[in-house]
Length: 223
Image 1 (cartoon, rainbow, N blue to C red):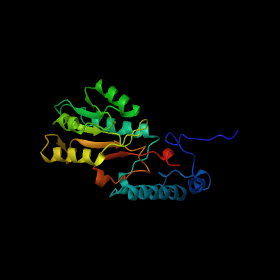
Image 2: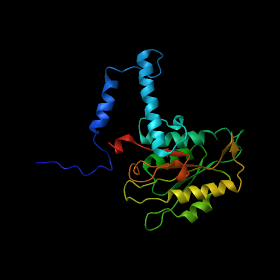
Image 3: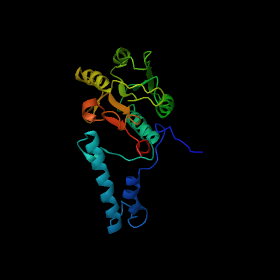
Image 4: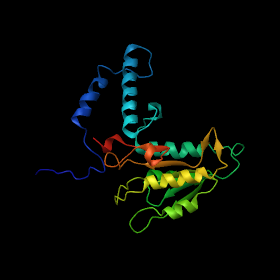
């Protein structure tokens, strides 16, 4: 019986073009990209080329902004724990940090945020309306001077709701423009993260247009 796969939102097969591009690095060009010898530098050049290609695709100005992780779950953890970790030392940040997420985030966001509560982080969960779209008025109301990060999924992996990321970005930028006490190393909080795993390649992912400081993508969703 012929088997028909209809779950491409969960994962996709490897595109033959991707397989061909990767094959040399499984055997002939197997060097460690951190090594200084020829094989290592050959692999390193390929990694940098991949970073540049991804940066161009999302409108990033610097390819060094692209960070490879083992999974989207790891990437989401890196963002939430990385930003929260900057505020772990109360001598430098004498306030209780706040993170805002939506009520329909992926478990990798929900569970990480729940764990961060045990480290003293306040987590505010903003509800969504009946159509699955985040309540932007509630989000704007939840912002305060202790808010260090807002994380809202671009496209939901279960119901397919597409969030108004550009509008959310503007709300955060307007809050920053009014002035925040939480400035450090020229970073003005809150920072904005969107889990865009389900949005690629169907929706615009220009980081400058959506105003995202962090954007999570996943290769296995796009062949």
